[in-house]
Length: 561
Image 1: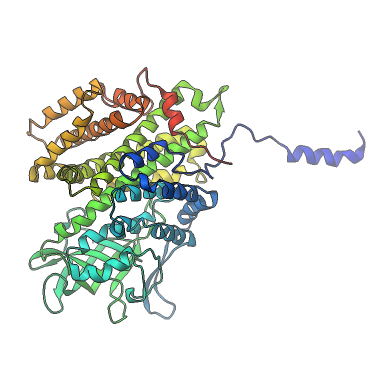
Image 2: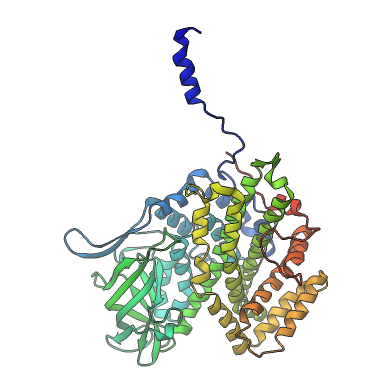
């Protein structure tokens, strides 16, 4: 060997330790609408076919690599609180990474916060749900102020004088994050401040007090004094707040600035350190005589704000369905590229069982979510209105409850790399329990189902009428529904059995929708696995005869490296 060759050979061996083969690549540069057959079909089926071109353009935009990166950046750099400026003035300013602001800007400019109110046409809620479903797959946390802004409108409309000023600003497609009075803004966002330490979901235990500045009653000005343990999105321009008056718990609209341009004393004590929903600021606050206007009737605060809560609960369904789709997409994408033991993962029978099971869960969640979107679009119809009342609680409970295990099982498809923080799965997993707990936990949703049944028995008739649309198409489903109907004939200890009953209600309506509308492989696979007497346990326990390959092919997105 020529001695002059030795350095070159050494460098060669040091630089080329291995070749990178048999690995996946990022799921980027794909159309979140065009490559989601279940979503496309649902949009068409539920009345928003007119929006398909717009939704396809939106899906292409948010699926680009540089846009998807915004979601990672907004969570890598969480919000920070400055209670005072450097001169000692109280500012209560939360600072966000630019990626968060870009996500907010996109949502607002595309009407995710307002389109059904500004353009109330058939399919408006369905089209908005589809856009929200896609954008949440990019990043979930910023959706909190978006959904609260969207959901505030029905509550404010109970007090026309307030709605006349605020609704145009709320629904404007203008994102203005400046920390200035609302009078200086064309567009505003709305938050919520209900929760207190001693009550949690039991808001009637709230102790915050409201004192009239002058006259009492709807639309009048009050001063609020108290402590709020959980204020979502403290940089919103105003908040719907619950506080006590002599007539009982009442609802108020509390802006961050007073009408004279001074800062309203809603003082942020700290930002919450959450395991998920990291990009979104949540806070603990003190109300030290903060000005607020009464919304709705005095003493009817829960009834007033429930108009907002029902819409945010629907958005929890959208968000968790989106989380399932995101996790499924990553698992399917990886499994289409990675080989083990001599065969591509998605060609291996046991992995096919797991992937198909995850896909069935995702499609069932989307089907119910979009069906309720159509019901929201048609609440003038008695059946649709009753379906919203019961179905939102059932769907919020079931879909949100199923999402954490779905995220974990999808992560397991990736293997050890899925646990790494540079994978999308830690964020998906940490986000997955949020919607199940916020806006009423699982038990609260089940109790709301019972409350709706007791207050308006017709909701049960509407539910079974909806499920009956699939009667005769699947023997297992018919038997399952008959057994479920028998549960309602025995009302003994129904509260104790509520989770089991609501579980079965959710499965039955999802199955009915899929039997009517999904391909046979999906509908048959869902019914065979979810309706069997033996029950459905761990993911990947689909019975024999399920066409896993067809289900996987239908659900798999195709990305450009």
